[in-house]
Image 1 (cartoon, helix red, strand yellow):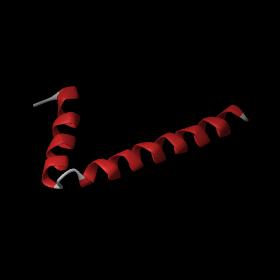
Image 2 (cartoon, rainbow, N blue to C red):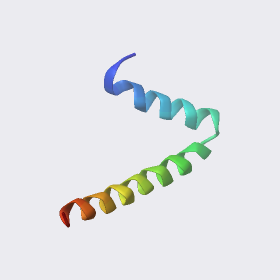
Image 3 (cartoon, one colour):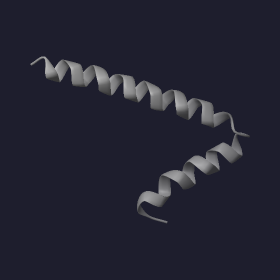
Image 4 (cartoon, rainbow, N blue to C red):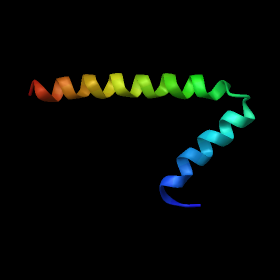
Amino acid sequence: MRGPAVTPFLLAAMAEETSGESITTNVALLRNNAATAALVAQQLASL
């Protein structure tokens, strides 16, 4: 398996292994990454 198929495969495998509990963690990580990206963008815009 290669390329863009790897991430969905790994996320599905982790969700299966954790009975879905990893989904909550991954969503929280996604939201945190988005918030961090927004802060970085704000700082770059102010330069």
